[in-house]
Image 1 (cartoon, helix red, strand yellow):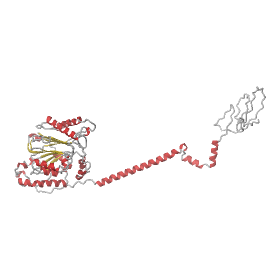
Image 2 (cartoon, one colour):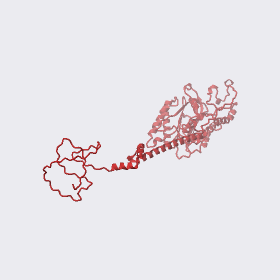
Image 3 (tube, helix red, strand yellow):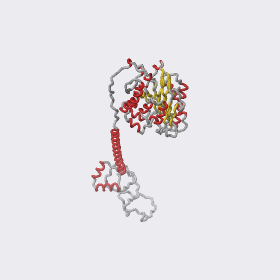
Image 4 (tube, helix red, strand yellow):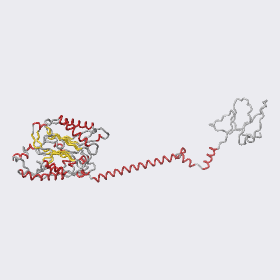
Length: 501
């Protein structure tokens, strides 16, 4: 496939920012009709060195393509991924200080090679494929942003996308520490008069698809005037806004074209945000068709009104192209009776109030369970602490019951028994077994013992009154030598003797 381009148009505006974080290739003012490679990068302003990231990716990728992928050869996906890996390697090499790994950029890549147009993008920078001859947008890339995913999941409406707090959150970007996952589309359905436009979000966020289509379908404006009009409409945007607009003048088919893939139709079918059959979308397309009806009627015979379809029919089906200027042959046209197109009911997102109410009920239930658990834990702690205050004298229910049944007299007697104990007088060679209960015995009758000669004892001085034993203290008499007996006498407790004896 060979192409003939008109002079590409470029926009490279600073907006109300103090620095330019967008980078385009070819550089502003350097593009010619012979160029086939176009790149647009938007540095991430919320991170450090966004302008550095966009410049590195744009330069590295363009240098790789010019060195290893000439336009007269078929450009493959593997070759593109090699170039992207080289750009990521240059990003990593630029990391010199903490925080530099957070720098990043978006990417839009269009390369018109021998096998068609290779389109790839990462982030929320877009490319459009306009077809003024039929008054439609053939394809628009899908933004890699959080609001787009929420819209496709039914969580946001079109109007809520424009005001959502997360509208600037990206799900994909070119960063040193992040995996690069581009969305690639191969395009072979290219016709004379088509426009391929690449924009950063600073251009398209203030303009609808219908307004963009009106500009590029206006046959009364030259290419330079269309670019200037677009620049004026986006002048009020505070962000940097940049882009390239490539106008296809002619296309020459080659036998190799039939072997090349065409992913545009499949990609459009999977693009819910672009393919939404809401009344708003139908009204936009019908308005564009009405605008283009007058020029087409002046150029030739009347043509049927344009009806939006998911995918345009290839021109080879009629063997005729509107740009040829010749009316179609009668045998090539099938006349059918116009029938109203049934419209699918608009998508109704889930009621936001019901979701919030359900979430509130669940939250209240969890709080109630948590409070109940805390109350139970508090009661248990109070019981444990109160029991610990009683010390080791804690009594169970059974002991408390028995204690309560005792009379005051029994309690008093028990305390007297434990507190008062009569001291025992135990003589030598006597043994008392505590385990055997003592039985009262009569005092044994002493047998007369013959006096034996005694050795004189030393005279003992009388003790002073302070040292004299009291009546309450037991006294012991001098032990006389005992005659050996065969059996030991029974334990005897002698009463205390008086001092007079």
